[in-house]
Image (cartoon, rainbow, N blue to C red):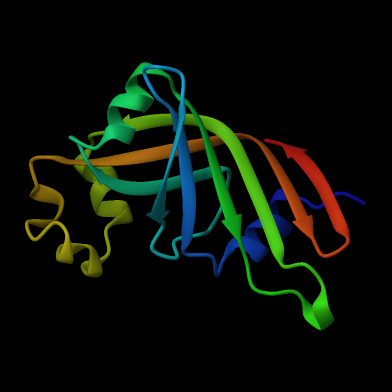
Length: 143
């Protein structure tokens, strides 16, 4: 029986880092590590802070198709760990109310002015499809 979004969200809860992939202006795939700050009350949307000058921002502005790749904890008794890939659409958010809703104090290491940092943006990834591998179980979920 395929997993539900709620079941996948529970498995994703402890995953901090992922790989965010975008399509570049020449059609290549570019990936970079991103942190969701362990903010995974997953409902089909993922949120990441970035600097407006980052390549991923211009990539998403030109072509919003994105992918996320995540790996969870190691599996039990030699089983494969939990993996999930997300295909979706990226959006660049410049709304300070959204910044405040997703802000964590630890982010001041990179943006000392907090949500008032002039170059700060949020990258929202809305999932269209998730594919997961959980030990011997695998499946796909359309969001």
